[in-house]
Image (cartoon, helix red, strand yellow):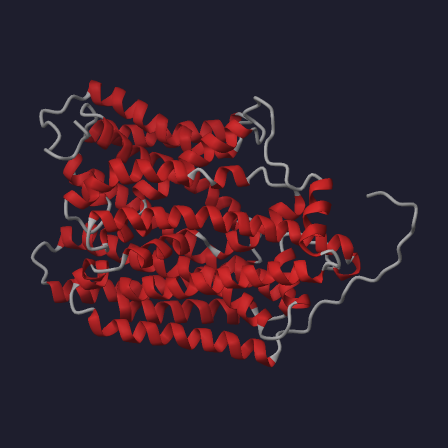
Length: 503
């Protein structure tokens, strides 16, 4: 709304830090995590227990854990910042998990459950060869190693900027606590702490939204009226340009982006395998899908509510002018003591739920796909010890990587990471697509397809203006296409094993 009135106001000074009640709430949350890890440690007497929880995890807990694993603290802060700056165009893509879920449930899940496997990459050996399994597993591990440092560093950076909490202290506390409960409790500790973390992070987001709406004189009506008048609920770009956020780009792009983790990422697939039955695993996938859509709407609403709030109170804006930290700034400056601590605990929760999943799943992949290949005669007790040692080392590496990024003041870490993910994530999912849907695909052909996929994506990203949302689909389809063609050039004498393809 334009006006001839000249407003004079002062921006609010940066906060001096958290209050005692905030620290108490965060401390109680951390203690709860340690208690859960300690209780779960009494069950972990074998690798079956440590990696899959004895396959007795309730479907609803597995579903909440999938959701927590996919929602990092970066997302927790980034989505409100996006809708604060722009509108709801990105939200359309968030609903694509509802399109991916039935495909995963009806096609991929039966393969993972039928083979009685521990890691997703064991399917690649059953369908192709041990070499394809190792390549897939190593790619997954490298991606997760990069992710661990980033999911610790970026939230710690944002919190230190707006709350004054020491960045290194945040990194070390999150890294050490996540390592302690993960190494002792295995996947059960990870899943049950994820359940708590989902409650905390969603509860914090809901409280923030309610308090923002309550602070407006006209309540929810003012929120919807002002946001609608400014076009903040705009959700569709009617263009055919592949370089812009056209509705077809968002829908296709996010469909394939969701297909990648739900078919080829051990941090997600491990939850399917930890439930007692295939029907329970299917319910966990649908639980996550529904929760993901609801949470996306919530976080976009939070961002829009932030815009309406600061439009009404411009004097309270962050003097730095940074919009990336708009949600943490609101938490630190506007929420009451205790509530602020709860929401900041939610940011910690989102970060730690990603970190603990990466640690446990990488330890599972290393022990099962790599170490067991090197030492096939190793006893289960020895494998369990290796898994715990790997978890400790991974926690240390992730924490050290985050501290190194903080020391360097690295502002491009996330961009670099997403580019690397884009080069290989789609190709890794392409291995599973080709394995399930084609009988022609064979080991040498698919390894060539994986490399060709990375090359195609590199060329697309450096020589075209295609929107990055399309990269995952290009990666998957190019891996399948080039892998299928290369498989015709290098025919295999061994047909696919029974039960590893659709037909």
